[in-house]
Image (cartoon, rainbow, N blue to C red; front, side, top):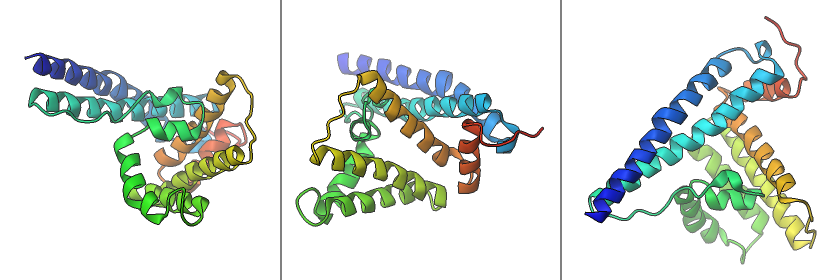
Length: 212
């Protein structure tokens, strides 16, 4: 009975994430991304992608909570899938917390068979894994570039770590860096194509002249 009650509670939390937060932020996101990117101002472009950043997390983690809750109702214990990824202070930490079932699958069935950290070139292995991660999400250039975008920063972080360059920055600054990389990556993920994504990012930073 305790497990069943916990399952109901977890399912309700997931449903609330999906219906109350994800669906409503998604409505705002759609309104902004449905416009040609040059019709957005930098402010609306930032609002659109921040809403999408919230939408995709609460959508994914919401359905994961619902699945975990249903499992508990029927006597199964499923592993956690998200662990507060938006508190991460680097991309390596982000991928340990984001969509953990997917990350662990690519680690176990692609990264480690390629040699992981021990055999071959670890940077080439990471490059291949994140190429595959991007393509797994969709057969489009923007998904591939999204995967390579994350792979690039993971490789840079690993190179700096192995070279002994530990940046002694406040955690808040590290968090801003991480979220900026993640948010720009979400533009690539959400945009209908690569050209739109690049134009949208340019709009965010005021590099596009706005037309009504």
